Length: 145
Image 1 (cartoon, rainbow, N blue to C red):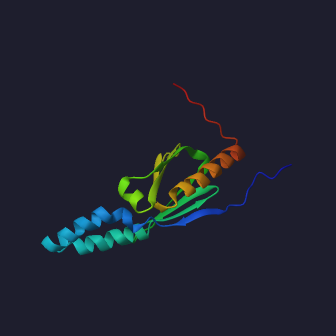
Image 2: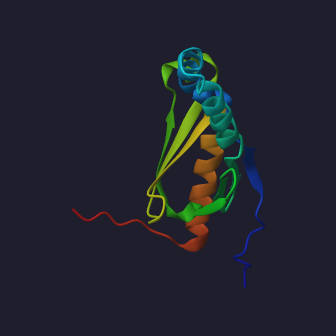
Image 3: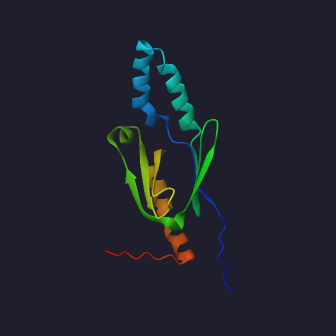
């Protein structure tokens, strides 16, 4: 009998680029001049983004998020219904992009992975891993109108 378990391998791991926060940092700069709170807000946003750590494997996506308290969310790849590669203009200029996943997962029906360098390559690796995982789990999608 063929072994249906497959070894979990990393596709990508890291945090979103801080460039996704550029508009926020710009507002914080203005608030620093006017109110003095902007620096604290910018530091908080920096650590919030830095502590948003993602692991994408050939079986699931694991998101660790939080500064003081950490929440871990897992999304099994076989639950992904659709995948999109998004390149807003200002991210495209910087060579970054977002990957959006529409899923059947109740806690994360839409997962947006922001600020990825090589987003198109990561999306393609994810697409292949999703197809393999769905085949391995014998998951089929039936659309009912």
